[in-house]
Amino acid sequence: MRCPACLLPMLLLLPLRLPAEPLSGYVFLDEATRAMQDDDFENPGMLTVDRGSELFHEHREAEEYSCSGCHGEDGAELDTKQIARYPVFNPNLGGLVTLQERVNYCWEISMDRFPLSAGHADLIALETFVRNLARGEKVDVQTDGGMAPLIAAGEVLYNTRFGQLDMACRHCHVQHQGQMLRGQRLSQGQANGFPEYRLGRGRITSLHQRLSECFVSFRAEPFEAGSDEYKLLELFIMSRGNGLEIETPAVRF
Image (cartoon, rainbow, N blue to C red):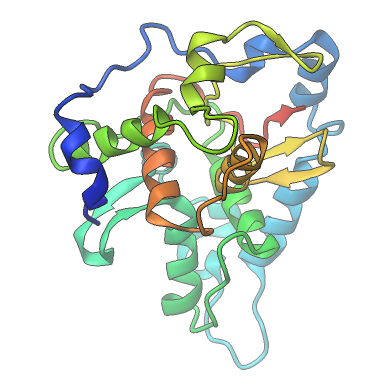
């Protein structure tokens, strides 16, 4: 995937700068919400993990394969350290690939099923199940080589003002992190817990869905689900959280 042409001139003006100390959103939670996340019996996001597990082991009639047929019972054959590296650059799959896209690729090509649309509940459930397998692994997104210009393009988007409120992601999650907004403490906006359960929405939420919600808050037109812009933002946001432990499914407000 190439950087959007409109962003290229700005790349020279905006060097890549990762935060000196990335902090998980968990740090900014109140004690009760932390306790909810920590207890798998209380964490409502675990229902989505269970749904993803059902889909992972599902073997439909007249179908030769299931996810578990290749990747082992409960995903035992999956490399959790590799899961922690997503998004990755895979030239065989067209360039920048998110974990959700990789799951959907297997669903379509290996399982011979119709691909699921970006944001489909079953696709998010599968992504949640797979990333939950890597819970405790440290985010380890590649930042050098061919990934560097893509991360820089994502940083441009992260710092670009959008909407009627003329706001950028950095205004909340860099300049005003730790301050209160509508009764909640602003975090760094790290993505190590996605897909995560949003108490304010009452549902599991993918990172792209959360980005769309932020754009609506800016009073801006969100990008299309699965768009290159959201993929670049996901890449930059995940890379700035390198070293944080995966918490999926995190619980946030």
